[in-house]
Amino acid sequence: MIRLGARSVDRIAAVGAHCDDIAIGAGGTLLTLCRARPGLRVDALVLSGGGGEREEEERAALAAFCPDADLRLTVLKLPDGRLPAHWEEAKSAVEELRARTDPDLILAPRTDDAHQDHRGLARLLPTAFRDHLVLGYEIVKWDGDLGRPSAYQPLAPEVAEEKVRLLQEHYPSQRHRPWYDREAFLGLARIRGIECQARYAEAFAVTKLTLDLGE
Image (cartoon, rainbow, N blue to C red):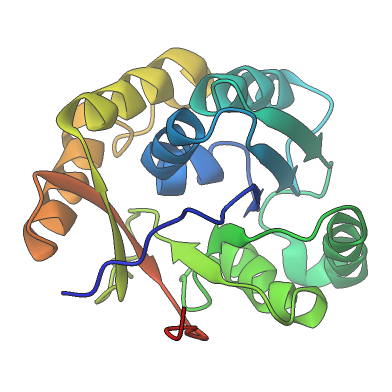
């Protein structure tokens, strides 16, 4: 198994179609990165949920998931489930994000996610971020679209537990959903941990990766 470190990661971008996407898909990775690198700059963009309860939840949650980070969060008001009809607005938001940051790493939805908003955002990213490493996170849902990931971030057991605690604490609007529970989040993390010889892990899809092994 090849292990690539993150010694050169000084700034990241995290994008989601909806409030809670980033935390569900990559909350443990954010906790791990931000604790290892105090002062890490995190530029986050969420396309929907702005101006109400969902934005308040997202701001509190990402502040908790990014301890000691320089967090800069933008939450827009695109309608949930309608990204294809608001393509230009979404594209402009991604381009504006690119104009203000040159991240070492991007956390984003997968390009083959079954949800049209997730998939659409993932497919927009390469139009603005052409030379960046993008890790496509996964979100468990009824569509049954989980596949075979190509990259893993092992999570310490206490980090996996804290991720679940923060998800329950900061997104009360989602607690009624039948899939939004401890068993679902820890269960997937346990499966991904088995796949990379760890107790828990988050897994990602990588569509393109450039290696620099000469240094």
